[in-house]
Image (cartoon, rainbow, N blue to C red; front, side, top):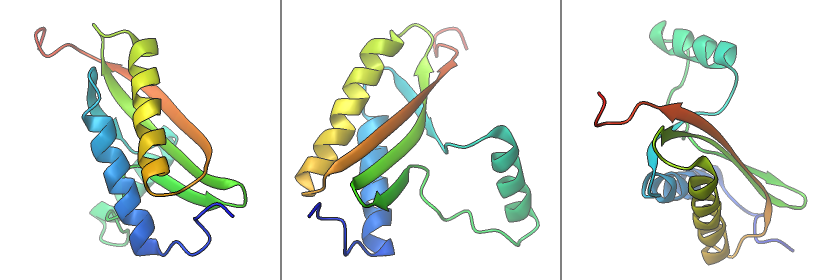
Length: 121
């Protein structure tokens, strides 16, 4: 069907790490952040600080669904870069990783967060 039916948690983690590497290598991307609301990220960080949470999960979300694989990530994009250009390149890189793994894409959701230029810092 879509190549993702038998994806183990270890394989999914490896795929998420490979996608994260591809995103970090995209020109204009300064960082990759865990997607989710501010509240959910604060709760996760608090749980980890208290020793009751697991922060070993990959930053990039990779979810296997009936129609294929859904990928979600937030990108820290340099304020001097064109978000449209960066998003297109990042999307193509994620799609290429999925194709190389023989996986069908259901969706790729990339959120842009502008970050200050390194030169201005």
